[in-house]
Length: 229
Image 1 (cartoon, one colour):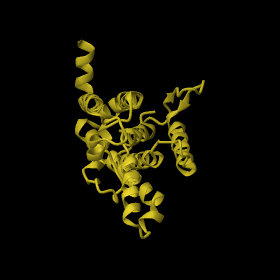
Image 2 (image 1 turned 90 degrees about the horizontal axis):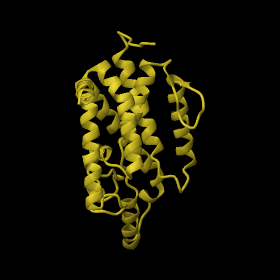
Image 3 (image 1 turned 180 degrees about the horizontal axis):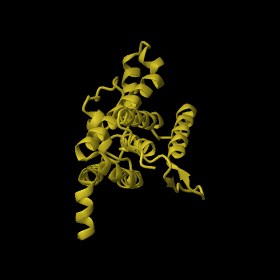
């Protein structure tokens, strides 16, 4: 109890975000939200703006949903490992603002990716049958996850603690945080450009969240740089 209480005192926003994400995942599991085509995904996952079910609030709600337990576990582990430190550095209010902005920008970047991917269809004249089929396709292409916001946190961590050594599986040796974030962004860029049909990762959303995080932390530290080591 003492350890848990101390953790909640030092990183209350991180703690509450983890709880909210876990509760939302439980609701997804109970009400069928882990399936591609489900009312919950229609309402709260992020869709292409051309989809009939698109709503602006999905830019926020999508970041509290996940596609599976491993997806949730890895994101919450990253939030706990790096977010708790950044919340202690910035304070709870600033950390929450940072988290939400990075998540929204990641969502906007993903919508830009949708616009590029479906550009030809969006600017074609479709029959009624084709429109129905296209709407079904868009309904299946929904984005969920806190990864974009957490990539922003990771980027901010790498900027603030650039020489901290991290162990990233399966690499058998430590890597400094500043090089780790460059490598992760690079891999996401390659994954986004290659655009494999079997790849369901929102690579450009990750990049958008990371670049947004770097921009924010650079702006905040422009006059009073806080780099600890």
